Structures are given as C-alpha cells and as structure tokens.
Image (cartoon, rainbow, N blue to C red; front, top):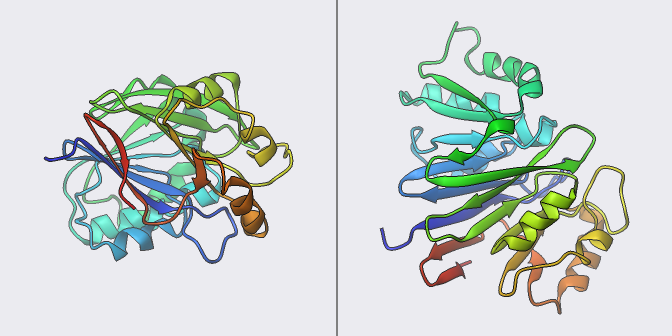
Length: 253
C-alpha cells in the first residue's frame, strides 16, 4: 500500500441537521477498517460508496444518543442481507450495552440471529483496535461519552471527541494529536456540548490540523467566519480525506 493510514469524513451533522449526514469517520490502515459512530443517516453514506459488506472490521460508538448509534440496525441488516460472514467487532461502554442490544436484535428481526457474529468489547478497557494503539477520555455530556485518540503505525495521532466538552485529559490528548475532530455544537458555553469559546482557547500541536463538526446549523455561518483566518482550524466537510504516511499527515480533500 502506498499510504499507511487513510481517513474519510462520512458525516459532520448534529442530531437534527437535515442537510448533512450524522457525524461519522471511516478509518483504514493495513486493510483494517474502523467506523466511528453510526447515526441514522450513516448507512446511506456507506451504501452510496458501494462498499463490500465485509469491508468494515469494527465499529466504535462514542455514546448511545440516537444520532451516534441508531444506524446500527440498518447497517447490520444490510451486511446480513448482502451475506456478510466475517465477525464484526462492536465497541461501546459497558453501561450502554442495554441501549444497544435492542438495536442489534432489530437488525435481524424476525430471524433469531444474524448470519455473522457480533463480537462485543467494552470501550473503558480499550488499549488497541486492529493496528492502532488507543486512549480514551470522558467528556461532559448528557450521557457518558468516550472520546478516542488513535495512533497510526507512523506514530501520527488522530483525536475524535464524540460529543461534549473535553475533560483535562481530553484536552491533553487533543494537544498531542496531528489531526483533531472536535464537536462544536454552539458558540457560547453549553452544559453538555463543545463550544467555540472553549475550543479557541485549547493548545494545539504545531502543524496539526483541527476540524470542527456536529455544529448547530444556525451557527455554521458565524463559525465559518471565525475560523477563516486561523491556520490550524477549519470546519470539517463530508467527503474530506486524510492520508498519513511517514513524511507526515496530508489533507487530500
């Protein structure tokens, strides 16, 4: 493979954005593919790419609000209908499996099981996914959310916040990372979401690129203007791609 690590932005929308796909990233390295979050409109984005039903190896759910997990039933049902046989690793917080299990059961209803195995893993004890070393951190959100930092084989780091304002550890992980995706729901402080006033104060690694997503549509024009002249900050765009190779991290959108 000419490149070690590749990322594609599947979705950037917040819970009620009617124009954009629910927030989600698709990551790949050494033929291992990881889907980060699977809201209700994410399956359609995957179908549009004509992916093989066996292509995704694992799915990481940051938290169980509908816009981050409700697409699981549809995606798993599609995999089953297309005769997937390989096991699929599903990663989530231990306390949130009771919310996810009905979604998994509905994916094969009225049949008793799927035609492939779902392997469950708790994200609290996560140290690695496929070829990547992993660290997680909590955010301040309405339900428990675990942000994710992933280290590629070249040593580059990707940080994905999920939803919520960052904890001190989350701020440290973001500051160490080469590519950072941060939820920015609002401009002013919010009790359970990331906001511009907090994000603009965060420390960043020299040369890193930060992308804001999960934005309330009413604030997008203002936020776009605010980041226009900040070198490391921009709004994430659907279809945006990133490649990490030995020489560095490249935006190929």
